[in-house]
Image (tube, rainbow, N blue to C red):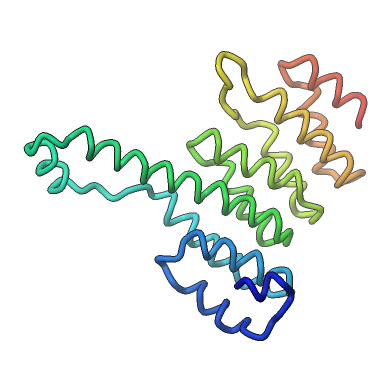
Length: 203
């Protein structure tokens, strides 16, 4: 994989094989991005499958939980489970970033579906990923992204910052497209004055 990232395709076949290893989750993200640099977009389907599996979360393990709590290690069990869940969320954010880097129509559609994730940080990763893409299909995702809720930082909503970024990128990456027009229309109807003003400026 390192050789592929250095533009040496000598072992590209081995890299493709790595996509099929279910235990190499973060490696799959790296391989898919490296392959795409060389015109091989086979990693998009692998990333989609990996995301859907990670989005299912952790399988319940009632037996282990009972043993842990009876043994007085319930807190440790819950902490370990929390770490594993956080790892899956981090993986899903990295998948979103990789899909944006690949910048293909298929990756745009997967990113648009990730906007429906229950976690604020994952939705944000999808929105910023779509905003990075120059692929025209990403514009439809931006039109969807501007209506999502991205949670809060402390007591402050993240939405105006994310919406403003989406509007700016729609103007620069997809000028004149109907989807960009949808983004501007949504931005002008935003409850945030700063986003309304920006939409009027960039339209």
